[in-house]
Image 1 (cartoon, helix red, strand yellow):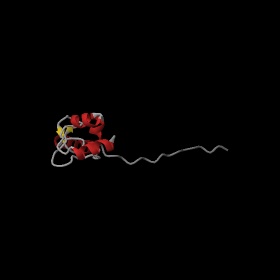
Image 2 (cartoon, helix red, strand yellow):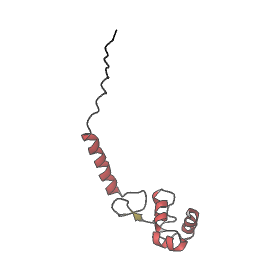
Image 3 (cartoon, one colour):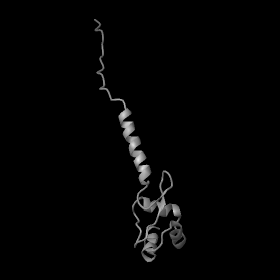
Image 4 (spheres, helix red, strand yellow):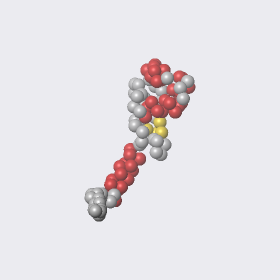
Length: 101
């Protein structure tokens, strides 16, 4: 299916909608979108095929998330690192026993 979509894009360089690609190839929109998100497919010629950001649905042409969501995720990650409690070193475990005679 990947090769089918790839060949279709080479022949139809002006296509910009994943739905058009799906209609022309018979491959599902979901699978074509997956190929683009994984970076396996790129638009041919000067046209850009867009698909939705996995977070907000905004049309994007590369990657999985738009710049806005990427920025939000980076800020969230930074905040989480700052609020994370410092890890304390594990205390050694002591065992006591009585010697019986």
